[in-house]
Image 1 (cartoon, rainbow, N blue to C red):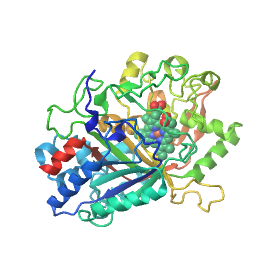
Image 2: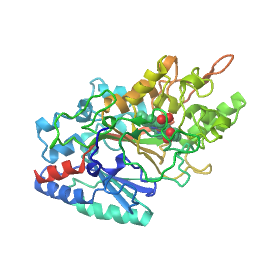
Image 3: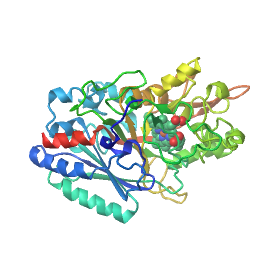
Image 4: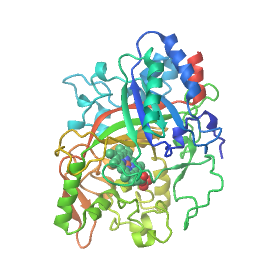
Amino acid sequence: MEKIEWEDVQRIVLSGFKHLPYSAYVLCRFRPEERAQKKKWLADLAKRLTPVLPDPERKTHCAINLALTASGLQHLGIGEPALNSFSMEFLEGMAPPHAPGAPIPRRTNILGDLEASSPEFWDWGGWDEKANHVDVLLLLFVADETSLDQLIESEMDAIHGVADGDPIVLKGHLFPDTKEHFGYVDGLSQPKIEGRPKKKNKAPEKGTSGIRPGSEVKPGEFLLGYLNERRARITTRHGRDIRRNGTYLVFRQLEQDVPAFNAFLSDVAKNLGETEDWVAARLLGRWRDGVPLVPERAVANVGCSKNDFLYYYEDRAGLTCPIGAHIRRANPRDSLIPDPVTALHLSKMHRIIRRGRPYGQRWKPNDQERLGEKAERGMLFIALNADIAGQFELIQHSWLNNPRFNGLYAGTDLISHFSGGESITIQSRPANLHIPRPAPFVRVRGGAYFFLPGIRALHDIAAS
Ligand code: HEM
């Protein structure tokens, strides 16, 4: 097993900071000039960043991590040869520029960022270069609201001299019940990096082997410089390669239309003669309390972990967990091709570490907001991966947004944000149920591709 330099890796790779439920994401654009000042800011900040080691289990009272876009790296003096070693999609960005009248950029089509979710309308990161461009993402995590405001203030003071205009501050938080805005428990299934520091004295969950099937993944799927599931290594040079111990960070602000989603659940439940919870579970693949549909609840209650399941032998036809359910599309585990062992290995090449958090207050039935209005709540979606095209983009494009996913012939995912999937299929006997689907429940409000460097690389960049 490869030895990983965890002391150099930013801690968000291994931790969702559940003990620090208040968070802020500071998005800023660098001033064009004053490189020396930017490097000074970086040198100071690099000392405050939170790494995995020395003590991965110590509950720090705050955590700070940093990610940069391609232009952010350029501002800090990264020249062409080093910059060109980064992946094409990172260099191109999530929303490549679009000239009026020209066809929609390929990447925008891949992501399905169309209609109301088009980068034309984004609040940040979109096509309006001047207003929307982002170089820096600071990720701040603390235990309470007052500490969050204090930390934001001190980091804003520090960045003030190098920022062009006012940074955008997005606040996210983990609700105590860990449910996101559509009412589902979130943050349950994550890939486990092989070679991660093991928690002391942690007994395996009751009824499990301690290692979830298919959840141990080679470090190179998430950290540059290590072997991945294809036995390849994304960085070739050791030592001063600035990509080593870093990973790509995908950040998307996904607005959620909760009243529209609830109205849909209620209509479908009435038509099918089922409960809203039953319908909600078929859309996600888990009950709202997190219990998976496979294995069925009766079995799951007999000491089975919320993640210790596969699909091939239990539910190949999707009669228990629909084939188009969110978690089955986003991680098909062993079900994508007829040979379950190879299928499971293939799925491991397309995993992401999710670190997103909800933003905005919970929707309440007496809120004034009407269907289709701009909602003030949603998901600050974050995915970490070593290969944006092969991991995040593949999941979004070929699995979530794909009406032909795994033998289906219509429909897209619960969270797809364009009107391509007019229906949702629930496998059933004697005949499948086809449910007409209204306008999307999710809308993209902003986004960018970042790189989350190793801490040594940041010191090197600051010193060079
Ligand atoms: C508003 C947007 C979204 C919401 C509300 C949402 C919600 C959820 C929930 C409730 C779960 C189940 C809990 C868990 O397994 O941790 C889940 C799982 C997952 N989601 Fe999402 N999600 C969203 C967007 C996305 C996007 C954009 C992607 C990827 C492109 C994605 C990928 C995944 C993956 C990989 C899993 C784990 C599946 C598994 O391993 O079983 N999600 N999501």
